[in-house]
Image (cartoon, rainbow, N blue to C red; front, top):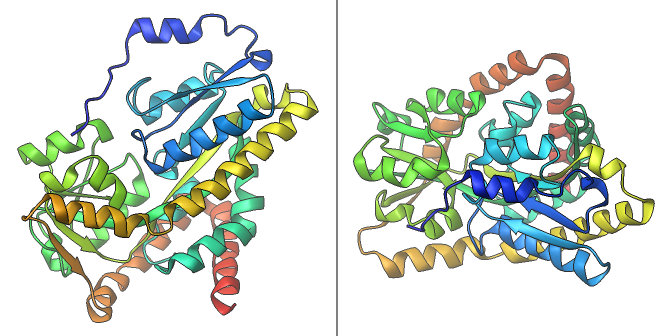
Length: 338
């Protein structure tokens, strides 16, 4: 398990120093939710590299724990302390309910090529989501997938019945809680920084994450039974404080967009094959790990419970959510037919 840095008054004080003219600052500040070398970190450093190679600006990147949890870095971005933030819809869902669409199980396919094409071409992703984020003072620069979600638990999971009496850690996301309710588990919201200890002490019985997080966070050490349920992909979003972005000169706005595009292309290349590599590292490191890949009949037992989650999404989001879901499905159908 990696050592996390605690947020201190000193770090926040140093961060805020000299930020009264954030829009024109030569050093831009960017925080994300992951560890060194994880997907968001790869994206952030590709973004930083493009900015610094093509301008006099610099970018300081803050990794998980250096400025607090996900909610902390979002608050700092909305307040203008940070210029850029990477936060998954799992946390943004409390701010932008429609972003919870990614937690409707079995909405996204498991095929990596189809998922990547969807993110490239989707009208819902590239046209509708920016408007939703703008309503919260955020300039959405990129949404991108990180990897297929994998469940880890204290024993193999092959059916909804296996989830009974299991406390499964979820992000602070109402729709994700509804998903695990539908699957038969007891959803248990817990900050990411407490997940390893929660698994180790039995506060929770399992959790879900992309396989590279399971590997880099050492979660397999305390939750060794991995199940590929095929129910979804972990998605994240990179955004800027909107006041900061709109206050930039046109050439700097173009630079930021170009850097985000370059980071996206680099990251999409990076994630291809990453899950397989991470799983091999886990297997090499532990003899206790088991890997279960559900067959179609087993998946169907879970898929049959997905409609109630979709209904809950529509109740939470109303007309906007309905329009987004319709477009989402149309976009998926378009790429699936190619």
